[in-house]
Amino acid sequence: MAVEFEPMKGRYFTLNIAGDDCRIYMEESGTGIPLLCLHTAGSDARQFRHILSDPDVTSRFRVIAFDLPWHGKSNPPKGFRDSDYKLTVDGYKRIISDVCFALDLQSPVVMGCSMGGRIVCHLALENPAYFRAMIALEGADKLEPYYNLEWLHRPDVHGGEIQAAFVSSQVAPTSPDEYRWETLWHYMQGGPGVFKGDLHFYWLDGDFDERSPQIDTKACPVYLMSGEYDCSCTPERTLETASRIKGSKATVMTGIGHFPMSENPALFKTYLMPVLLEIANNAA
Image 1 (spheres, helix red, strand yellow):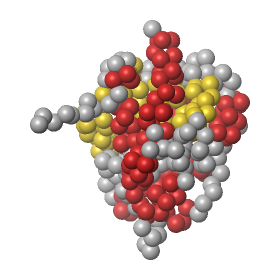
Image 2: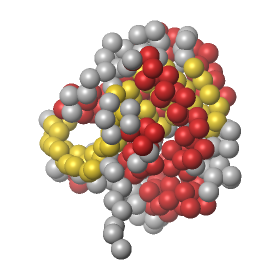
Image 3: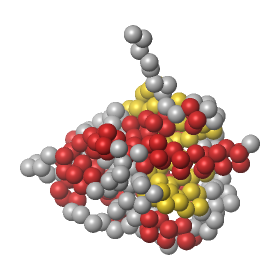
Image 4: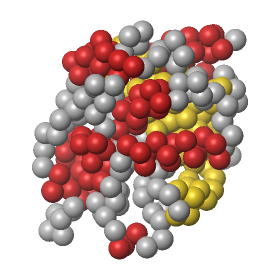
């Protein structure tokens, strides 16, 4: 029986980030408008496999998803054992910009989820002329911690299992069981201390509610999409963010939690496609 391969292709490249050479893993599929996808805290780009293999998307978009350094198949920098990983606003922006320039992406759309959904609005604020549009999944301009981060990196606790336990409440109860557990499996495989380091940005360093009204959505359209079952970046926080970003378009997705692209890909597609088609038609 012939093997049926999925359409995405995986590759590695080396990127110098803040003086350190980092080996980055990426997958891409399709042609057309660049669509750069940013994974959630503590996980990796496998979350976007359904979008990468969907011909309705890849017929008009070149979908690219990469693992941040320390995540998935990307390596941490040399000497990582001598430092604690901690993601910051400036560091995160620099990585994304460096990836865009290294891949020579022209007017890309950036779609990020969770911490990726937060950083896209920072990018829209600071460089609207370069980016075509931003899609913030489960991203808000103001968040607050609601559990103790110290549990995420302790020698007496299995980090992957506690990470999956913490985020399991953010998956919608109606999401298919297969994809619920696939999403949680990604978290079970995270590197030691990586989820905790990501949450430094997500909860402590990423707030920009005082500056979000400055985003020019005429230069860079912003789409905010939130799952109704998300107890981390709640729909209320997303709608509050939308009220501060004049011209942004907000959608609350019924039946979806914090991980729309991986926990219920078929349902998420019904919300995503109108946004992608609007972006594509505006580019025509």
